[in-house]
Figure (cartoon, helix red, strand yellow):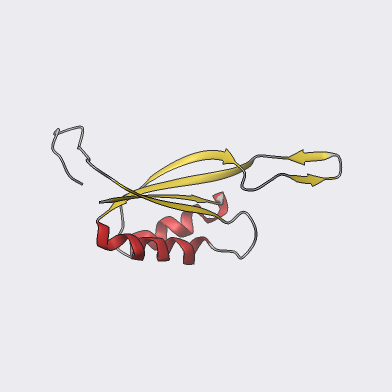
Length: 104
């Protein structure tokens, strides 16, 4: 099992979630966040060093991870700096709180 964490622009949140759902990945968690990539932006006297982002979390089977990443990239990409980042990590265990059972 893999955990995919996609940090995307807030303006792309709905598009990415919709694209994932249409591709067969209906379950995800959304978290509002602030951050920056490689640096800050100065506009006149104002220094912007944190930008709003949305972190989308979804757990998928190992063989579905590449497809999920492709869907996210296609839906989130604008071609400009700040489009975001995707992190894919292994999940050792997962439990449903209501039942206490292991698995997705």
